[in-house]
Length: 378
Image (tube, rainbow, N blue to C red; front, side, top):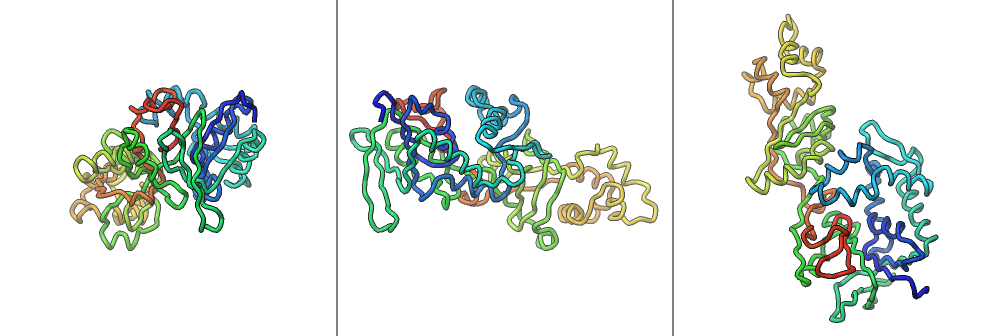
């Protein structure tokens, strides 16, 4: 080992940890990753099963505005933007493309494991050491990191103590325990008097108590090209109707606003615009003068409202409201839906909570423990 190098211990082996290790200068830092699973990158691989969305291509200012609080994250993201990420991926052999939703994906034929292997190849070339089955268990009295190592047999454990010049924590949030993110680490920070915010689900399914006759017809079906509002937030996109409630990009994007209402009043009120491409006046006009057509046929011919949207409208409106053109038009533009709960935290795509931003400086360093940094979902 070159003694002029600083030693860096990265705790956790997810995407954030791997990216940090890939960016550190191997001439200045001697880097070791400690991962409690048998292999690194498990959440990255699991996330790739549903379409491997690497980033978003939107303008950087709009991109930064998606983060809360944007003022805190702006310098961090501006230092390595969504465009920088695409260029870096290209430099390691991962070509990407922009989908119709402006999300960025690997080109066809490149699988999540290929992306992971490309990053691991970078780490190998940099001389990064990866130690698996090392579970972090806090600090000892001399401020050394404590690790429990479980070997392949699972029957023997050994405790190790590590002293590093720089420590980077990338331990994830509190969902998808199967991948290693369980939030168990929080207790060790509490012992250091570091404020931990309660973990809550984000980007998850939300519960709606559908009528039985509706869910029998609509379960698993999609509502495409809709607009969803909650409080002062809105998002266009797609929704999937499930027996539990709603999933999909449009409702995931409103997770923060929904969570706020759930925490404050015990439920959240959403408003669904089934046809955001038409104004209220245009919809009213299309509903009149239908001649001998049934109302359902008129809705299909003039507004392309088919079975699932029709069933949803009928489940919310009574017969008098449904047959009143003015009320029906208003509800097509603003259909109220009541969220009663989030999915269980372990089923969430991600979580909010963890270490309070008040505990870290602009460089993501813990104020109470110098040279210790926290990154990623934790």
